[in-house]
Image 1 (cartoon, rainbow, N blue to C red):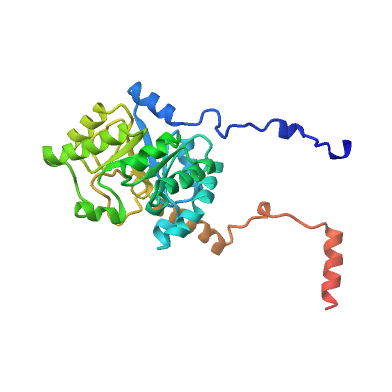
Image 2 (tube, rainbow, N blue to C red):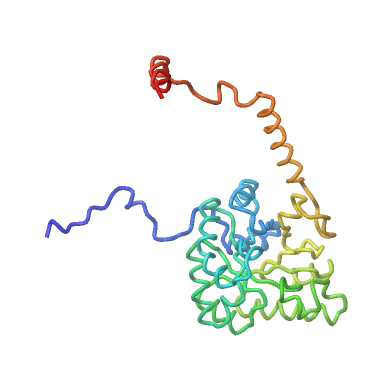
Length: 297
């Protein structure tokens, strides 16, 4: 029997049963911020890589609204869903504390059972919450009842789903339209949604809905502060042909990156780089042997 004894290393003994990391910005943390009246900061890397998310965490941003690279480079939704756990895990390894709110592709929650299966896999990979855009209340409740954390979206939807509202445009201009947004938000809350983004609604409507709901409400292109604000990295870093009306540019990525590349390229062309300190030398005797050998060829 002793031959089959399993030896547990000291490293293995330190493995935790929970996947949560101390200091991780869970949904409970976000709710606490709302309850205390502290603004929540949400960024969206918009298929930028893990270093953008890492930088956001270093800056103490609270939430990363994450999509897969395939959202912009592929029309194969099944492929997007297939790579989702890998992409989430890449971001989680880069940033341990930031709250990852993963945007689910519509086919991934086309049934209650599929929503539970895919959502579970995404959260196991490192997501803290799930964003199924335009989810129905029945599926939402099923996910919530099975302990998945849904951090959804109201107001203007994204992508092809904007067709139902006549395109990507401002909503809630009238009291009647504003009530439609509120009713959707309220029903979402009552069916288990733990937080939500609100998009393209008037400042007054944005703030009123955030105040009325128990859960955190994050504004994007919605003017009002609500319980916090979201901005997409392409706007934050001036990467769009022209800035959006709701956005504020804080840095120009292309200007910064192109300047760094140009300085490096100039150093290469003028001989300023590399310098002797950027390499290392062979032992003189060995180099002489090498040269003797190479001259024989």
